[in-house]
Image (cartoon, rainbow, N blue to C red; front, side):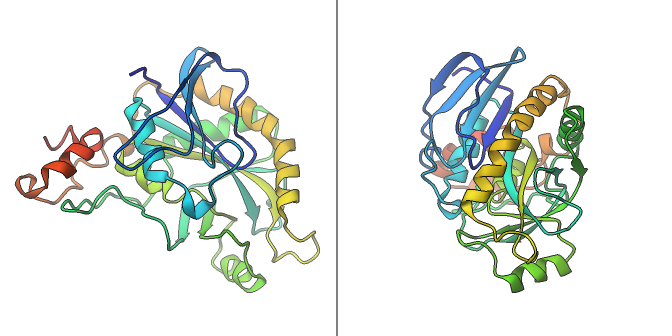
Length: 287
């Protein structure tokens, strides 16, 4: 199968990535079902990349329904080492304004309906997740957005809520009291699964609104989110190009060997079917 080193997951409003050359569309079946949509392989600044619309073209999957295990597995099967995720977020702080971009470095998990690990069914693995976003990739993304002249925030804590409803005012104020910076409905389980798959994961979080804590601003709505996203997407695409050509060949981060000491199950008792299904992920440690 054709390979790509860079994976790009497009969020709400980003279902196509114009400007790719030598484009080829591939549909990949995985042991965890089909990904959100076909994956487009193409060259960006001469670098072979894979683009996957997170919600499917036409926005068919809600955050809770996303086939995240299939998405990450499919990108892994293409040889992807870096995933750049693009997501829309609401701001929980006055200083983080709509149209800004945040490169987050922390996550608080408020999801409860989503399968969030490749492990189970006879194999147990515990990966380190203290730093959920790859610091190496995040630095590259920050520099890339900065070059576009857009206001960009280096670091920040994401609340990942279940959705699909937006927050209540009480919830929004609670998250602010925790010191969180932005809120969104994706990022998890993507980041957890990417770490288990030993893929670097970083995010460009596009701020589309103040969450409902800010009663002075307009109440958050889908129309507002999409309107502000459309204005910011040009910047995100420019930043992508800067980032892709500046990613290091060698990965000096924890991501590339996250499973090295994480699998604690005796290989002799792991069911053969599980080994087969996870061979793409655990194969270099367990045969």
